[in-house]
Amino acid sequence: MELSNQGPGHEGGRARTRHRNLDQRRSPPDKRSYRVNFSLYARLAPDHQPIVDIGTAVLELKTGLEAMNFADGNSCESNYMRLKMLESHIRNGRLSDDLTWVS
Image (cartoon, rainbow, N blue to C red; front, side, top):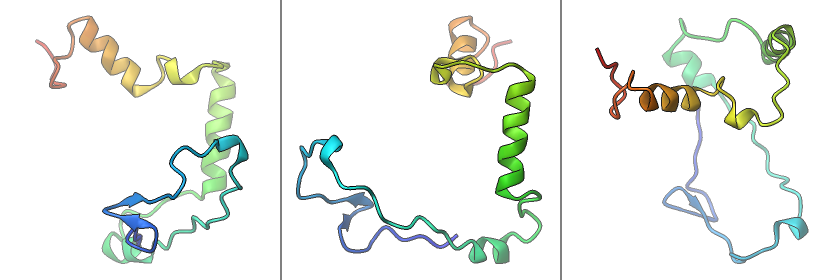
């Protein structure tokens, strides 16, 4: 993957903006392209390439979520989120603060 965030409008990896308090509702749509070239990754890791295309992966996720009747409107707070499970393990004393299992 060949990415660069050092082009115009960027300093130290952070985007620069003239209007720091710009109301997002009146902002123009983002027309930048987010296409990424993965040829470097393909050359560096030929044995670790995707085995399904993105369309298939999305369809499999959708099918799996439907099969388990997942309908959580607040999915960011769901126990299916890895962070929430880690927090639960820490809260219940099964995992330490440095993320090692407590014996």
